[in-house]
Figure 1 (cartoon, rainbow, N blue to C red):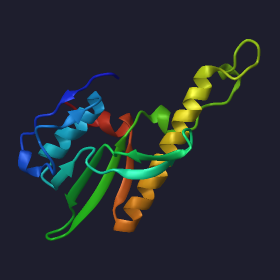
Figure 2 (figure 1 turned 180 degrees about the horizontal axis):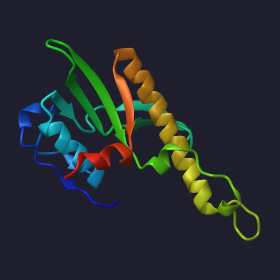
Figure 3 (figure 1 turned 180 degrees about the vertical axis):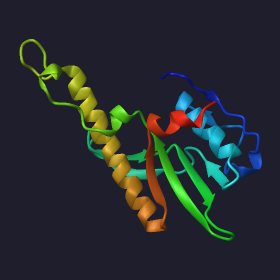
Figure 4 (figure 1 turned 60 degrees about the vertical axis):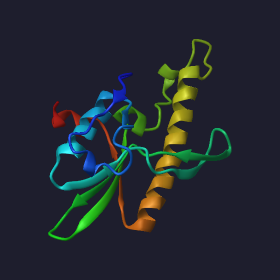
Amino acid sequence: MAYSGRFRPKNPGKYKGDPTKIIYRSLWELKVFRRCDEHPDIVEWQSEEIAIPYMNPVKGKTSRYFPDIVIKKRVGADKYHMIMIEIKPKSQTKPPDPSGRNKTATGRVSRRYINEAATYAVNEAKWNAAERYCKERNWTFHIMTEDEIKPLGK
């Protein structure tokens, strides 16, 4: 899914940040951005505006994670809840399958499996940092996959 571009909100006042610089990096992100922009209970939202430090297990150093979306959602007359969302394919939310199909004909671990394992390790480190960040602020962290995005339409 290599589709990307600029998102132009219909309700730029709801966007926390510069509404002329909203970039979507997939069609799934575009669908969720539209939903955030149009949903009456989402009073404010932002994309990749927060940097969360995390320990990158592959590089062995501190890196910064920019979650896809943070929304402020109305949950009552004068009550709001903050939700941080990461959009990922469901396949990237699970550890890679270490079964034999991921090995080369000589029995060595395939390069593909090594790449998938590294990607998952980095994602897991990011998500753990996001969970801590949200817990400290009484927010919710949620990983959204195609199972939740496809029913949104558009």
